[in-house]
Image 1 (tube, rainbow, N blue to C red):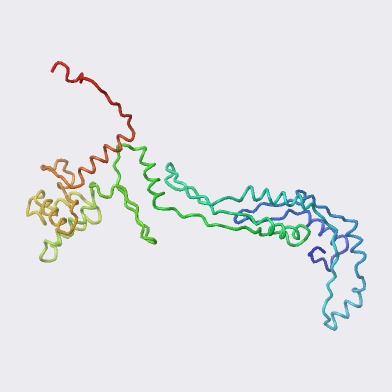
Image 2 (image 1 turned 120 degrees about the vertical axis):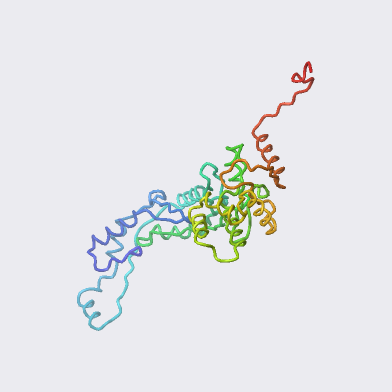
Amino acid sequence: MAGLQVGGMPRHQALNAVEVALATPLIVTHHHETPSLSPSLVELRYDATQTVANLDAAPVDWHGVAVFAAYVLRWGSTQILVPVAVSFSEACLSRHVERIAEEYDGPPREPAALPAALGFGSPRPGCCLDFEATRLRLAPALVSASARRVDLVVDVEESPEVEPDLLLQLLEERLDDHPGLIPGVFIKDLRSGEEVTLNSDLAFSGLSVLKVAVLEEVYWNLDRPPDPETTKLISETVTESGNSTANLLLRDAIGDGDAHEATERLADSMRRSGLLNTLMGAPHDEKDPGREIVTDADVVVAAAMIDRLVHHAEIISLKGPSYRRKGK
């Protein structure tokens, strides 16, 4: 009955099972969305009286001895289809399909930068409901007591991926809250090879990263395995990122007793390695290097700082004589 197997059920139980099933909302799937379709929305009508009449008119000779004989002789069973009197409004169904399309259809939505969360809004694929094909799937499901789940016919256009330019936009918008900050960013997508850089040509403090160069220079200067004291200094510099141990390595293993001389030798060594704008101005924790340090990127740094300050400032142009120089 309406696709529901009711063989072996008492008459009243079979009729009740069909009526309950037809009153259950359809679960429909629109891409990843699962709205339901209540039978009342399409004015579904179940005619119990006519269905009872159809059941009573069905063949009734397949019972008793005939069933036993079929079991013993292994006859194939005969399926009896009982028509169920059920109808719905085609116009209401069409309007409901239109409402589903209005709610869930749309063009692809690109991921949006969310600076406050330091992330991206979820992209969404584009969806377009195939109206006629969807109606042809929903109509038989509405009058079926068993097929109460329907996948709608939807044309899907995949959402765009996060582009490097969007990542750069996110970083720049987040940095707008810190006008005095000069950032340096380098990001590489290992799948596509695309790179995102921000102020990649500026010089920044290398902090403890320079200890890698210090250790490399120590081993470059050794002509034999390090003695126990030097081994201990190397170990503490690596494991604890110790500034004092790195300074001792600079002084004793590189600078022949002069840590400042060691920083100049280290700068020369890094320059020969191609790190033209990487240098160590002074031993760790010393604020004054005792000499002026200028790199090719210093002018770019100054220009970037001015640019960020001007970006958040209101520029006032004054014309006329200078009051500051009045009387001079």
